[in-house]
Image 1 (cartoon, rainbow, N blue to C red):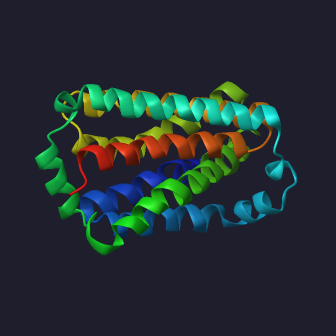
Image 2 (cartoon, rainbow, N blue to C red; image 1 turned 90 degrees about the vertical axis):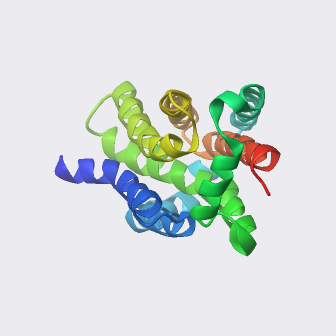
Length: 215
């Protein structure tokens, strides 16, 4: 039980230490993705070797693509429509500079968010933690717990990035997305639909950045 709790809360600790303790996005990425790789490294190798996780079904790809486009449209459309309510652009730009999300390494960080982040997060939550918890509880509770802890560390960044109460309410769609991607893992028995959908959702976030915050 203690081990499972540590595995669930570990990513949140890494984000808290890097973002709010060290105030650096690059260091946060190092700590966060380092944790995901260290803990689920063996599972990553299994995923890459598994025929199941390399299974490209037409239904799975279409489902991942459509939901990803929907998530992208919701993220970009909602923020575009209510940007002045959601955040202060000047204040947020300064915060990102303070967090070292700027300069020559900016493109690298964006590529990490777009490619590395969806892949590692899906392997950690929808494969590694899923496999650990599904042996102890039913599918609904497994999805509920993994989605809760997946959304928990997102709240640490949302609190700083968005105005009140959007910064707390923003955790809800993150949680729901986790439930959807977990369901995809269960239904299709492969991570590919969830990874594809996740990548497109993250693209929506990056488009928001270039539309409103890039200087």
